[in-house]
Length: 73
Image: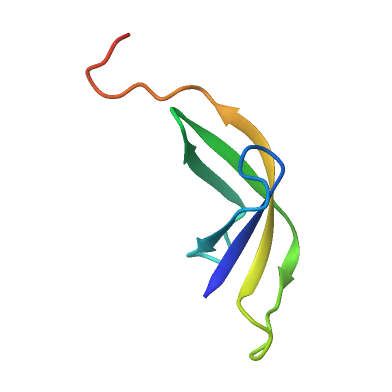
């Protein structure tokens, strides 16, 4: 199991599961939009006895509001 530790932005300090340890960019749904986080640095805790592998992701931007299908408002 791997985790992504999020830095800055609205989700600062949150930890979420990371399915792919090679992931370099996360797009996370947030309210009516999406937040973009970029990976920085190397993986930590990669040994067999030091906990889950951890990657650091830093806030980049918030993308435009999402518009649900069929809603042109």
